[in-house]
Length: 299
Image (cartoon, rainbow, N blue to C red):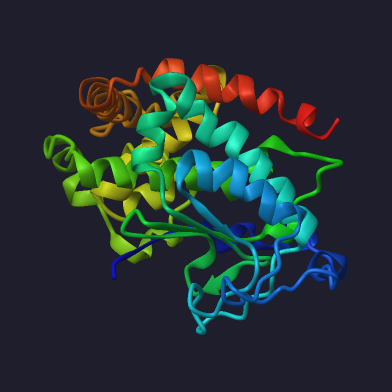
């Protein structure tokens, strides 16, 4: 089964590692961390909440116990902490799923949302960096680094990087698999896609070449998904700063990163509007508003 991976480049590892502690890897021993059969697993408060907030309204199963059938034995993974998984499930529903509900209605969200969300306590490492998210053909999304969540100090930049950009990115793949985007998009920078070597590119270089992130240089489909996810998870001012950074230093330069990004975004915006009835500006406004309200979930 084809898997999509969302990475954070290795250049960011020192900061990420500093944010992790031994305490983050501790688990609530009062709640089983291993996935049992449905008959054996006892319903706790979190299970009941998931039933009422994910399974009934969206037909989505959230797994927070460590399940070797859902994870890759190639990686050294630890279980998600019970309380942090509970908190993240509340945040994901409010900021991501309900944002789409607000724009196009819960019926459409229910139809296309991934049917399984697997939470993992730490991250999986590869030679390209650490994996922030993983999706399998639109049916399952894995969210890593759950144990780094601190509900007493919610950092929106961290939440976007580790969770929400991943969710929007993977959801865009699902939409693209259902309704294809204009193939002209892939041809705009066709010669600059470099596959798995993307991790060798710095942010500034990617922008100058007309890519919103280094990961966007992997292939056309990843480029498209990065455009959507980064657009809606950042403010208009931040997006404009990306475009300004993409402007050529030399006015006689053959490549104008900003012009390329604007050309790509026109296709992305038109696709979301015409194929799905989504105004990306409206979706961004909803996402940004909900992001500013997440502390209210825990007060």
